[in-house]
Amino acid sequence: MLDGNALAGDLREVFAADVTTALYTCGGCGHADVIATLHLWGPAPGQVARCPHCTDVVLRLVQTPDRLILDLRGTVRLEIPRAG
Image 1 (cartoon, rainbow, N blue to C red):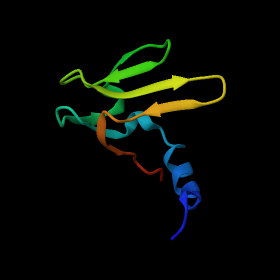
Image 2 (image 1 turned 180 degrees about the vertical axis):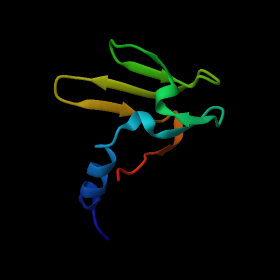
Image 3 (image 1 turned 90 degrees about the vertical axis):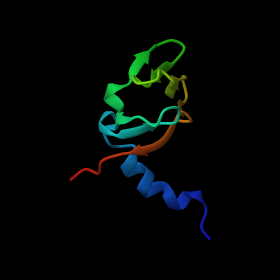
Image 4 (image 1 turned 180 degrees about the horizontal axis):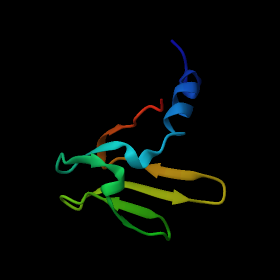
């Protein structure tokens, strides 16, 4: 068994990608599309992206002075295309 540090390389590849082209699946209605199609509210205190099909919250993004907080509990799946 390894700890979470073993994911470092793979996660670096995932979060270096253009995530707006990633395919999400809404946890509320099952609608699937690319992140770029979400309806966005924000920016303060954070950004909220809602499903254009059912208006459920798919993701939240908050930036603080020392970190970025990404809440994806509204999506059941996120498919990020690999570069190359």
